[in-house]
Length: 84
Image (cartoon, rainbow, N blue to C red; front, side, top):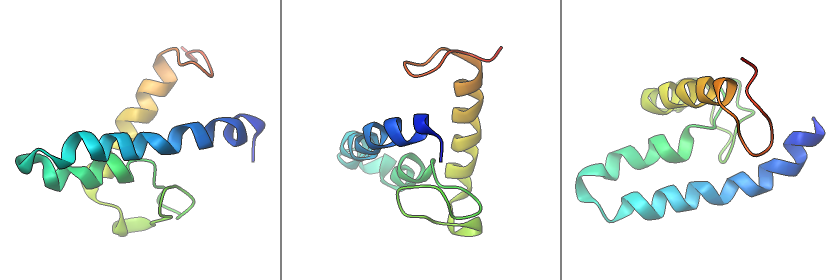
């Protein structure tokens, strides 16, 4: 595990709770809560927060994860700059 991952992962986990808190009070977005919470899950089960794998991860969360990865690669973030 990289040092960057070890340092930043605890800081990211509360974001799931914040996303949940923002959506839970909006009735028509209740089904989308899992997309926000599960978008850091990985196909092989090494993601978080629940360690879901494969098709256990909602399709919307998998797509959101791809978009988040693209954004991470192409924009500056507090922990690392863009690679392009």
